[in-house]
Image (cartoon, rainbow, N blue to C red):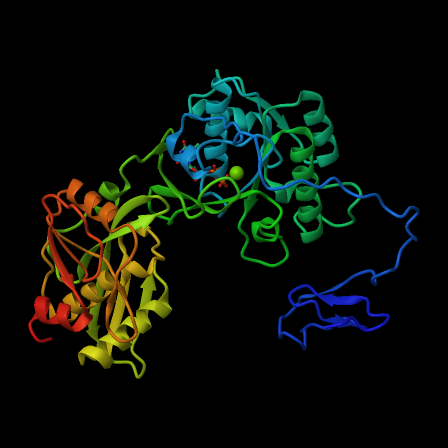
Length: 452
Ligand code: TYD
Ligand code: MG
């Protein structure tokens, strides 16, 4: 909408203009999104007419950017094949998940391979960082350590030192003297990150910005920075589980959705080279309610166990509890089972869980979810050597999903010998796997559980 004359307040979500502040935007309904802005055309008059900028075509002779490898395979892959010089990378994650540990280890690996690395901590004293380095066995590595929170001083130091990689841990502790608000506030975090990103581009220094995910609004979380940086990585993990997943959610230099899997040990993070084996490691053999999903995370197949529990409910509205999957997806699958296959879950509590604390977002998991639900409801175990994958449409049909061959290959490698998949899948060669291709959910129910 055209800004009203004299309007100085704008909704940061939809751009609607207001003459005074309000808690809620009438145009789009967003709360707390209205911010004060200088009206368009305000400010000093331009002094010159502006110059024409140089223009080129899309053809390029330039080689792809040279990448620095850390030697930590899981990290390099998530970065898209190594660290790109002059790139800005945001690493987000819950406090205590292991971001500082990961980045200190990464800095040490890069440094050992000849890249000049600086680790700037605004959270811990030098002695604390050194203690962690000692625990990780990294005291001998040539990482340059700095502890400060004044970003102006840090930038001046970086400019003098010109490292290949600078790690800023964390952005919420940094402050700029020309911004009048506390460290951690949205404006400080944004301004600091902006300075860092433009420094990275201007001086050719790769910058890693650490950002804590925050539950409260007072401290700005990493989300407000996602659009500024080239690469956004989130470090995730479940409390009580040892393994951690580094996930690329945005990457200008590589595939998004790539994951790296690590295990937190007594002396730092260790790479997990075969995540499927880890996620399936403590699977009980052939119990009802368990189905193995052959999934794809980024460019790599990963097998996970989907567990369901179905029990009579004494509540008016039975429970639907989901961990590691989208709850909307569960509702859809339950509705399809009822409407297309005549299998109702009314009066039953349903609990669904992805084992090991993994999170699955692929629609390809639908079939394994349905199988786990049916297996729990009918109290019939699914054969322990079976994997499943396929998307369920609202009509109850099974839709083929991508990378069928990779999924089957991974399953065969881990000792599985049969797979249930949609009819029209391009299965190709799959040695040692018995394929059971199903057109729809009804056929699957009939095949596995009798008529249902
Ligand atoms: P940390 O890297 O400080 O987390 P973040 O920077 O994301 O806040 O990791 C802290 C946790 O990791 C802490 O609970 C202790 C644990 N840890 C280990 O289990 N092993 C180790 O070798 C190290 C250094 C930490
Ligand atoms: Mg930390």
